[in-house]
Structures are given as structure tokens and as C-alpha cells.
Image (cartoon, rainbow, N blue to C red):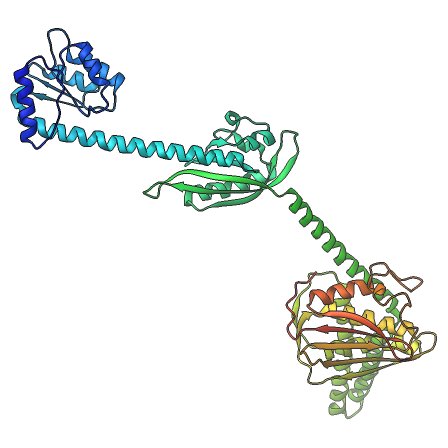
Length: 498
């Protein structure tokens, strides 16, 4: 208590005790005594007169603000005017009480102590938060990845050393929106749109984008950020990382390139096979067209009679329509094998596909003195697969079997049945030259071929297609001559297609 009047000091003490304050009072009068009192860590409150013989309250207030800004400072004076009181409050005084109205002292002290305690608790919490954030940033600085923090509006506030080393930008260059300069021009708009959405919605951010390094080269990064919220749920900051995924992206691009190459090779294989079957296709299409012409002529004759035979003409016309439709079906089958398109899974009847390929390859077999025999399980259920790709596989296996017997002739056997473990099994067996003596599996390797003009891709592509359908394609030698090629399919194949 800065007070030169002992009577007034005792009176203040009485009023405090009357208001249930238990306090120990240190009274001082001079500047030296006041400074000495400020060094006492037990002091919790300063009460000061405004004017003293050798000292004044304003000077004491300034000293207290400099040495102990945490202490509440209340003027208790009988000479403090309104203007002086306002000036004191502006400088930093907590409150003022006139000696003529000491009844206000208790509430003023209670409020001052409460505010000081709340301020101390708040400062302590803020210090804990600052320390926690510093420790967090120290941890982030040590992790082997690029990291950053932003303010609630998304402007950069901090980046770790690894970002500075990679980008070549200092923390100052990166601050605000400076980091956007590293984004690839093609990724900038999409990245910023997603970032603005997260800032507006508060949802965690995640996006892949290319960032330019200090060497001028771009690399792919997975950028993630999450918000840090206060006790009221309001976003204070965002914390984020950049993970290098350049190697992964290159691997994905390489897989896509190989997938496209495989699809192109499969297409080329179909085209080359179709070239080999051109004569057979011409023969197959010519038959129904010739029959349709003959029936059209017959229909014309029936109608030109003096008494037109309408019923006979209608019969001939109906048969002619059936012939033309059969020719159209053959053309459709050929077109489906020849066209390039996106694989499409659907429920397919394997027996139906075998019959289609038997008709398609019948002339080729006849020219090579080969007969085709089918033994199909009529109760065979459907499978989910790509029709065109299964047509390609069967055409490849059956034409290979026919070619294997072109020097000797023979029988090509195609069977379908259901295995004991519930799969669909298709077998194509010939009595030709058989499998290579250096291993059955080599025939499924890309570019391996036993044909003088073969590409070595047919069986490799066929095995790949079957495996992606969830099945297996293999070959075994027959007991006598020739070989048997078999492939299985699940009843419902859900494998992804190439």
C-alpha cells in the first residue's frame, strides 16, 4: 500500500477485513520503499494514493507496469479528479476508489483479483499452447517429409526445412500464397479449387499435384492437410504434409502403358487371325446369300403364275429372310472380333460361343482335312465374361489345333463341362504335332512361337485374358498324338478386364 497517512491505511485495512478479505499489508511511502516492495513475490495487489509528499501515484503506476505488469493496481485517493482518474486508467491502472466512498473498495478489489487470476490462467494456457506448438513444430521439423502450417484462411504461416531445401524458396518466399508458384500450371486450378473447398467446409484436404523443385523439375506429391480447432470448434490453423509419390505415379503410368500395349497386341492378334480366316468367312457368308437369291427367284416365279401361289411364295420369302439374317449374324460375329472397343462383361453362354466358332472355322477345318466334334454339357450355366475376348480365345485355340493337323488331317474335339469344384471347363484337343519338348509353359510366353509366320502373342494374350477373368489356361500332351488345351472360368467371373 503506497500511503503516507497511517490513519487512512488502517481505515482501508478495516474496510477490506469487513469485506472478508484476509490480507497482509505492506505500507510504503517513498520510491525506494515502493521498488523494494515490488520485489516481494508474495504481493498480489497494489493500492496507491495519488499524491504523497515525496512520491506520486502515477510514477508508482509506471514503475509497477514496468516491473510487475501482472499485479492489479488500484488508486485509493481523496484528491483524484475525474480527468486524472481517466488518465490513470488509460496508462494501465486497474481501477480507482475515492476515500470518501470506501464501500466500493471491496468489490473493486474482488474484481481486480478475479481479472488478474483469469489473465494469469489465460497467459499460462497460451504459454502451454505455444510450448506445445513449438514442440509439435520441432517434431514436424524432424520427420523425413515436407510439412507446413497455414492460417485459417489458407495463407502459409510456416514450412519446415525439407520444403525449403526442395523448393528453393525461403519461409518468407513461401508465406501467404507464395507456395502456389511451385505448382505445375496444369495442376494449379484443380488443386486450388479443392483447397478452397476444404477451407470453406473444414473437411480434411487431400490431392495429388506436381510441385517444382529448386532444380526446375516437377515431381508428384500427395498433399494432405487437417484443421486444428479451438475449444469452440473454430479453425485456428491447418497442418499439412507433402509426400513424394513420383515413383508410384511413374509405375502407374508404366502399368497403363503396358495395359494399352497389351490391348493393342490383342487387337492385332484378332486382326491377323481374321486375315487367315478370310477365305473361310467368304465361304460362310456366300452360302446363305446364294440360298437367299435362289429363294427370291422361287418366290418371284410363284407370284408370276397366272394363278399366283401366295402361300408358296410366302414360304420362300420367309426362308429367304432367314438366310439373309444368318448371313448378317455371321457378319456381326466377324465384326465383333475385328473391331477395337472397350471390354464389356455380360452373362455369356459358352456353348453358344463354341457353336459360333465351330461354324466360323468349319471351312478352314475342311480345307485341312480336319473334322470338328463338339461334346457340350447342355446344363452348363452361364458365366460373366467378355464375349468378344472369349471368342478370340476359342478361335485362337481351335485354329491352332487345326493348323497342328494340317499335314495329317484328323479330328478337333471341343468339350464343355462343369468341374467338381464348381468351375466351367472348356477343352480343345487335337491329334497334331503336339507340344514342344522343351517345356509346355514356354508356349505361353510372349513372342514364343513354333509357327514360321507366327507372332507368338496368341497364347500369351489368351492366358492373360483368362487369368483376369479369374480362371486358368494350360496345356497337356495327349496319350497318343497331339495336345489338349484347357481353360477354366468361375461361374460368375468378376475379374477386371485388360
